[in-house]
Length: 122
Image (cartoon, rainbow, N blue to C red):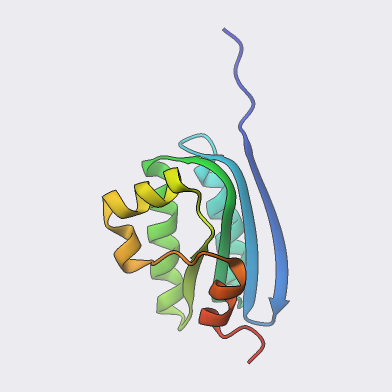
């Protein structure tokens, strides 16, 4: 059986010295979670502690993806920032709600709302 190609696309848009938007598309699972973690760690290391994840293109997320989000929000908050989730589809939103992560990390309906919550541009 041939190995399937990991299906995760990540685009980074730097908004200001402390804020970045990471657009995540495809599947966030055991095979791809490490890649997203690397991107998040890199942004935090660059001093961008307010990270918006645009999840509008994310079709699937499992517990590995949830773990990346949990670790990243803790790191960002330790550095005086936060992680903001934006535009999850109904399936991803349901996973966030079922696991209780939506309480700690409430998803925003749109990227603009998440950026406003992050105080981008201030």
